[in-house]
Length: 424
Image (cartoon, rainbow, N blue to C red; front, side):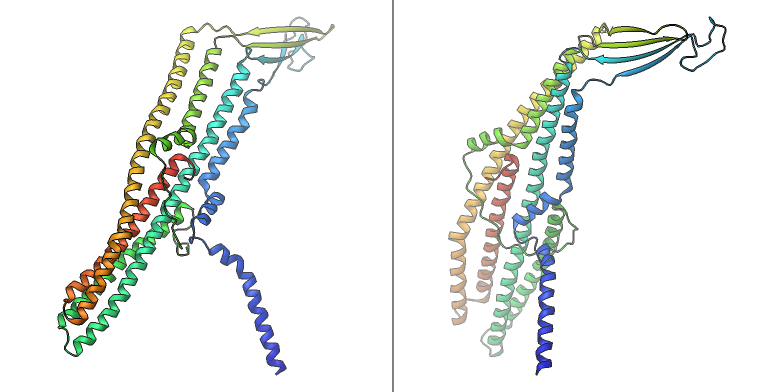
């Protein structure tokens, strides 16, 4: 008795350790059942988002560098290295020639150029940060739509298997009635043919389910055949505000517009910097002269470049202005395109939502009532088997159409959220 008790305790302890050690694995594998977990996984592991973040960090590091002074230059000059005046032999050693000059030169950009270069770098860093919003919206939209298709494929499979179970039960009923001569053999053959048709449809649905899993894993990203839990639910598509409100929100929040507007600001800063190139840059130099025999002396030098190449500068300025104007035009074109896209998507979502409402509140109850009447009529012999099968098929088609309409509405909302860069 004691030995048995000790054995049970050991088994219980082993099971407890297995549960404890297996808990992280189970938590890790629980991916795919809900959208929030998928989005969180992508934010932490998607290389596209990591790349955009690194690019933004790199651009931010350039801000300080852009406004810094250029590096100073050092020059070493050996005067009369052949020692012609002193009669000594040729030398390349400092102090062994006629005069050795040590010179340090510090370039100095014209006033305001350093500030403009720093401003240009800041604008580019802002554009890189805004590109993170574009990438995040794109990745999240792909995951949302892939999850919706995954949910749709799983739902189709569930509906078709429910229908298959009902048809198999109906087949047994028909075979029983056929065995006692109450129905013709044709009814049994028709039931079996309908079952085969559903099984063929299931093969296609299973293929679509595998594709949906692979697409969803690719968006995360994970291996295409990585396991995913069955999707539990797909939230109902939220009510959409009027189109004018959607367009107004897009002006304020759309990542694409923010990135293009940042490009306008980059173009403005670049154009101003090019115009400032009309003015000369300077350089200050300090020279220490050390003759082989004699006292040291110091020289001070001021240097400036002369911007005489007017044609090239005019061309550079015009090019920068055109780039700035093109950036403004891209913003206007994108805003118009976004308005049109929002109008299309809103109409599609509202149509899908209305279709789903009619299917759920009207057609599906009618199809169920028709099926119940057909079943009762078939049992009493007042309705033939074709009518019963057609009623069953109508139920299947209506359920699938309802699922498809709900998913289409949800996908349309995901597209709108991608444009806006935020949830509705």
